[in-house]
Length: 485
Image (cartoon, rainbow, N blue to C red; front, top):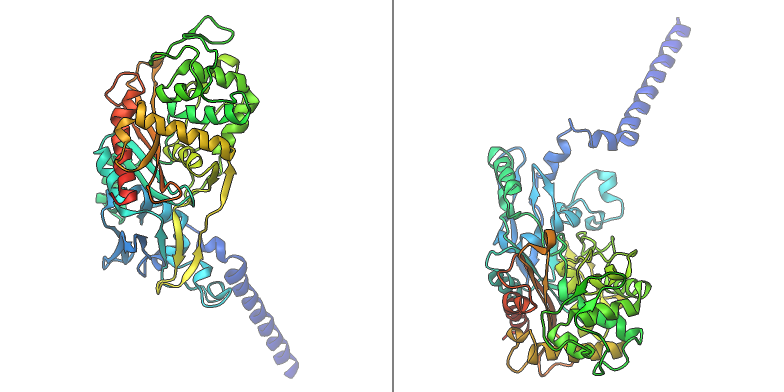
């Protein structure tokens, strides 16, 4: 009898061990797959069971949460949603997250292990901490100046602090209210469909996710390449360039909108924006030299993050000389984001030292203790300090005596470059108006801000003056806000 009891006990013990092993397998080995099973709503319910952390601008929150009383309890809200949508993105219970809401989701949702009181605490307890906060580098007055300046037209503005890389303004218009997408149900799906169907593409972040032909603003990059390569040794000497200029290997002539470009110096070519001079200089630098130069400014970088991903600004690495000539004046297949062109102006303003752009100053716990702080670091030495000094003088001439006079600010040193990019079949589309610039207060040792503005389909002739007319006044307003004018 006792023998049978022992056998039964052993069998029960074996079954208990098997049960424990299976429970361990489910809880440890299969935990991740079960967590991410579409049929499992526990994580989703837990995710929205507490308020999401906030995104801050100038010490004030531009986001919030509201108690819906539903199973997914807390829903995201936004203050001045359209103004800050290109910065915050959206956090939707239906469609997920974008931009900072996505890049810093771990902090904002409370799941980031850096918020835990002890290492591996969240993993062991399978819990989450109160959502932390994200402090941005955006300056509210500059963001508003850019948004108001665009006035709902299709376009974008990016502004950077040259000495640090801090992004001070990031605007894209037309914009949208991300709060319309926060919850669930038919109002959210209807808003999603309407926003995605809109011809104006309000959900497109034109400042960092849309690339445009940069037109004549790209001539600053070509000028830097020519000076660094000693193709031009004195920017005030004549360049021996005909006008019009026959593109190499073709019978096609490249004209100028400006007058007086034949044999113009580099300085004069920048001031009045001569296509012929800059195209010829790009060919003289050569394809390898130009590719090396543009990479130092950030072109062709597929990994740029601020922390959201930035679209690649393109400069072809394989071209014929006629294509290189056009690319050197910001046409052919050359494209850039507004942020990229703000980086070009920033590199000139900061003595050739291009700082890596960043949008998040620091992340904190709910109580305000710093979790992580971003600092300034060099992205590339885009050009020599000597070249930067020469380009700064030339850009000042553009504003004081050339096509960029609409960006002038009394008592402030302002450098700029206008641009009008042609597009469409046979360049039939209305041009994009560009302006890049930087501004330095009279009592400061270095420029305070670098700005890039693009206005799509600007109502202007295909001349650089359209950039000066449509985009420069917006840049001036942003620079004034940066300087407290």
